[in-house]
Image (cartoon, rainbow, N blue to C red):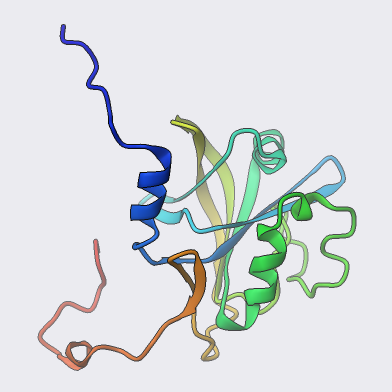
Length: 187
């Protein structure tokens, strides 16, 4: 058996390179122990259509990871360009567990998994399917139990790129071509 390969990649180098990958911005939420928890995340992805699975990665030391583990449920809300203040709010360490963090925010009527901010481009309610340790994070895999697209009224998705919030620009000229598949990447 061969020895493990030593990596020369530092955390700072990986972080600097990853900043070139634009991502969507979402808020992960859960309810547990009489508290509501939230955190802004960019590590959200759909994993499977059958069964319907989503994934989101976060620090296993996060109180939100403990809330998801204990409650067995969570919600992910995809934010629009109108929700940058919400993204900033829940990106602040400790803000997502503060008492009354949601009292001044309009939310969808009580999804069992966690608060869903009103006006989100899309939302996913999920039951915890698996928790997978991945390096210094845990990947929460959720089986989707409900979805919605409340913010499909023309709001643009909020993006994160190069350590800044960004907006989606106009479509590329090739987007109007009808010779390309319309199901999307990975479909």
